[in-house]
Image (cartoon, rainbow, N blue to C red; front, top):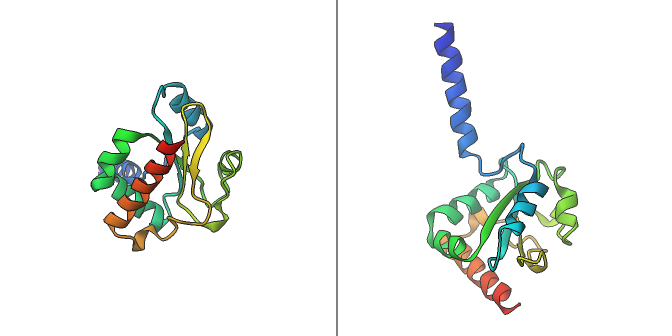
Length: 150
């Protein structure tokens, strides 16, 4: 009986971990480096967020289950970076001129040559839970257009 309880708890934890879009134990710098190294002509979309953040979760849901999903998969390699309680990977964000003080999620678009093509700086997505799926789609459509101009 005790073993079944342990297995149930493990299964529940695994299911919860699978629902979390931000890998809290990932090496974000390595993941970004690998994405840039394997990106020939595709820009890299970096999303700084956290699993506790309702706006980050809303953005992730919209990115995976709406019109945005197709747009993003077609036009970007995506790297999600866990920022903890805005105390983790802050140096990585700052190295691109992105600061988390105006809220998360924060989005950064990098060229395959690691040049900043676009970055949210004013908390544009920090209210994602109040944006419609179309609003999020329009945001990314605009970001894609700006990134392509460069």
